[in-house]
Length: 279
Image (cartoon, rainbow, N blue to C red; front, side, top):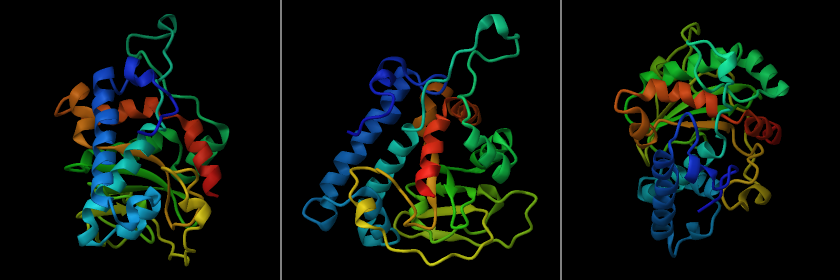
């Protein structure tokens, strides 16, 4: 099992206001161990047995015969990438709150990230609204990602099931249910990742630049050390929309509330570091 930046605190305290200790154990420890064990089993005796996860994902995407390897590698990566950018939200001083305030507030926003979000989305609040709308429209399980595209711009990408940003050469303008902003006039297309029936959608009008092959430095990572830019789309944040992530604490109708709570637990300093490393 890989370690999280928050160490063992999640097991004892959870990650407030998103995960109680029991929900944290289920969505992080139990799920992560499940996919690691399954990946070790299905990759045993193959070239993927000792290959870095990102390279495994890229090489097995869209190959139905390798779907078990792809699915468990992708889900192990995505779940860790998601949890590693979370930390308990700072408590709000009760003396400074009104009855309408929640008892937690969002994490501090580094200046560089604040400028990025303002430039690319119109600010943090606009990003939260955009992501919340996409998440609410999605059915089934999947992920909402913030990615750095080939034009060095942050975009939002939605994938279903085990889908990751590494499956796609560029962002497509697609179904408005999962990524296109309402104010964008764009044709719609649909992209399917055959190996896991993943669909992805988001907004990016710029044609793709030819991408260099992943370097050995990037490939030699236990989980992910530095994504750099060997791929057209580099994730900097992932939000899990798998039902096991929110059912325990938020219930069957609680996905929207769960996503709002996630924005209070995002460690933006981690996002800042990932953006810097990807440039």
